[in-house]
Image 1 (cartoon, rainbow, N blue to C red):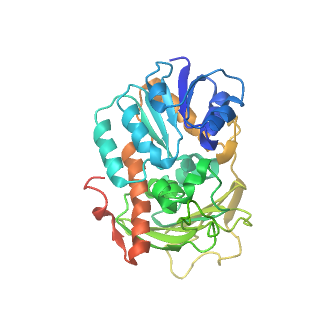
Image 2 (spheres, helix red, strand yellow):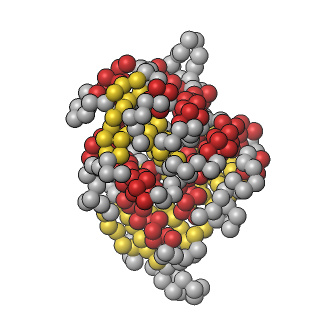
Image 3 (cartoon, rainbow, N blue to C red):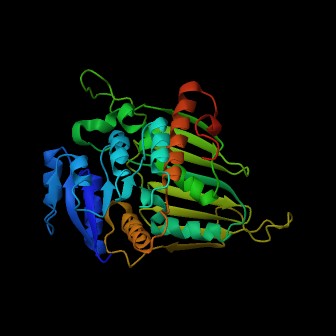
Length: 370
């Protein structure tokens, strides 16, 4: 397939991000757009450089015969219905996170997709951000030994406005720890190469959107949380989320600590720090004291082959590269439906832990084997 014909379902900010990446990537043509919201369609068309056919419904685009692949970038609560239709087609699918907002929808989609030949790929762009990708490569090469802790901090601004402010309510988003954080839970699994067993969480809505009203209803999305995730090996991961901390310099900070060293990735600065413990096997010689920076290598990680940085430091560009390569070679999706659903389930378990004040076993959420 020399040129991949793409259809974009959902032309909000993320849909337009996909279009810009495909323009930059080459070997792709955006032939169709679908969105019931006219203003979003017009904003996508205003990007110029293409002349797609537009539709007001996803069904019409899927059945148009104009596309080889579709990117689903519509609101979270619409993913399940759109995927049900797309999975019945022969189209290759790239669906934005979160895969679904309800676990039962995700399990039904897994059953529907069983035996399907075309690609079905869940977009989880964080693992493709250059400094993060490099720290994952080093971790999987045992640069820090046996991984014991993974810590992810995101201190950022509140949720952006969306069409109709649909993202102000957990019924539409799946909850903040699904909407905003499922890619972090996926990243934890990917770094540790394990599946989570237990989730503990504490969180609340303390600052954001409390003065907003929609048909008399106050938004119910939490704006800060701590989440701890346990893994079978004894490793654990931690998420620190605050969405009223926009005065942060590096708003995303990922730390991986093993028994032989430590890695840190910071964004947007693109800094990667790496240090190994000296004489780590001898208790009487513990290496350099902490806080001195001695023995720590610091560098910026950039990928000069990325032609469009966009909203995610070039990660979406790389993900589209990988998707196109898999499509052309007949290879598998790097992030399949099962992996996408597991990240949603971890977020849902975290919300249940907050609601009950109890740790939640993942075995109560997902069938055995998932």
